[in-house]
Length: 320
Image (cartoon, rainbow, N blue to C red; front, side, top):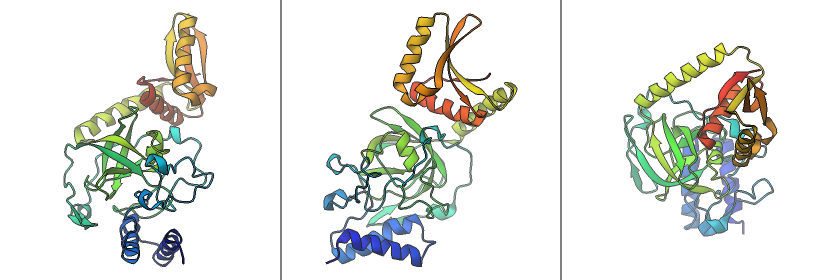
């Protein structure tokens, strides 16, 4: 007899081939529902596969994410892409901006016997719960907002937050924080609070376990305007600094070489990937800890954003 996993994979592929425009929301809801009626006990979400042991085949690319014994893992044929970008850590947060909310996503809806009432305005939201992530199974499919899902963008799915809107997500365990653009619906299991894109989950260090405890906070218009003002000032400073090439990040300046070396060692320990691009230079009597060079101010700013999240410092962009 054909196994449930094999049947579900074939069924999903047939649906996509026959109806390529169907959204991720359709695949998340309808396919599990059909299979549930067939099997009588199938899992109802791509993330709740552990009860049946339906973790997808652990190929070498997937082994670091499918940890069934720890309660994580991804559902069936979902998981990371075959060739994820090497610079995921440099992908910047979503940049909050004021956007019109989609009326089509404001209507109450029912999924799996639960009724959800989406928020119709941008208002304060603060909740703690479990974050999961979704990857290649939905990559390139249409989201609930009508946009195409990109697993390498800083986005998320939430059952009730307005679409589109922005949220700050903080990993309770390690304090790491990201900003995501909410443009999809889900997850629909009661114990899950938010579904993150692969990159957002990667930056919060929840890829390996498949899920993690987070705090989700909505970003309101007042803060969006403040962030926009800060970015404008930063861009002007970068433009005044000169050429678009040979950009460095100054992480600190010390009058004592030993202090500079201690600080450099601390940074390299906290952010190992910086080891190859960090160093110390002496200039005007100061020992400056720097990172770079970066090919452009855009790449330098992206690296600066990541360093700020990890070390709570604000690197200065300088030109050689």
